[in-house]
Length: 400
Image (cartoon, rainbow, N blue to C red; front, side, top):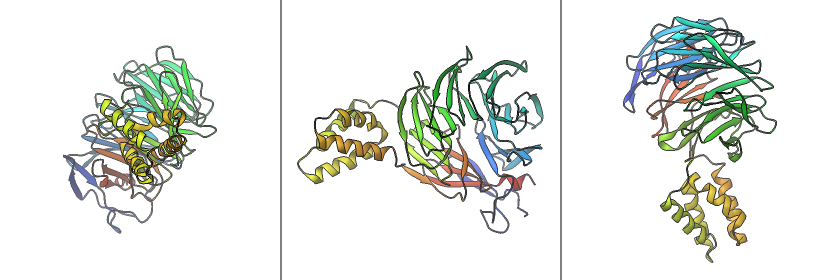
């Protein structure tokens, strides 16, 4: 199959987006172009987009696009697939994981290899930089996480505790903790001591994604049990869970809009309103008013109050949780339980268009764009505010 180079440039959200169109069917390949994308990431300044491709037994590529000039800047190739990518905080280097024992650092400017880090067993599956860029964390299929001093190219420590494959790693914003996701569980680590702090399980299901909330108070985990679980990062206690999502592969938080993006086997991206903060005085007063109406003599008033409560969104969840247990009114307890269940199982919006499972999602630095990588062979860009697709590229074709 042959493809044109980038031939359409769209302006959206104040920046230029790229679309790679197939010759036969504009905007969509007839069948997935191999190797399919595994992950995409924006540079810290939003001017570059890196996409990595390839399954374990396929050849892999890392391709960098300039989002302003509509050009592929370079493509780096590996003999095995590349499952993960992360930019250093200064944007000058990016790290890739591979389905080999090696993780590599590439110069963002040229794509040339800056350094290689070995001894990761079967696969250097997940990579992440510390907020200061000094430490590179690599999660492996061999159940351990290595921390590397980037400047000295020396191992700092190895974190052990997982009992099966590790898929992803992420530092907290202060760099003091790390969260990892794997087949057995997600785990929170103390970087200073190298000790495991908490184990976050999804029953017997594997955990494919784990992220910190922007303020580091919470850890959000996504599993193949069809749930996103929210945990207190300080003590590891479960707070609540979002349900009925299919197998969850990726998570991304949009702080400016209190939105959580969830992707996986369902082919769509679910957006949940998820303000992870306490209700302010005005919101709390409104919620209390609606709670009283849940026990009104009028059925219409009770139904209306319930609908208005749902529109309050996740900010009402803690109060609903408390009231469903403590209210003296059986009617209020039942309604609060049902409302809370709806809040935790119904997304605010769905981004549709992918024709196969979505492996990962990531946010642009300004919070206006979401990028998704799918097994259908495409990477798609989404206008977060408009809830619509605004760009598309096919990295497998660009690498030919």
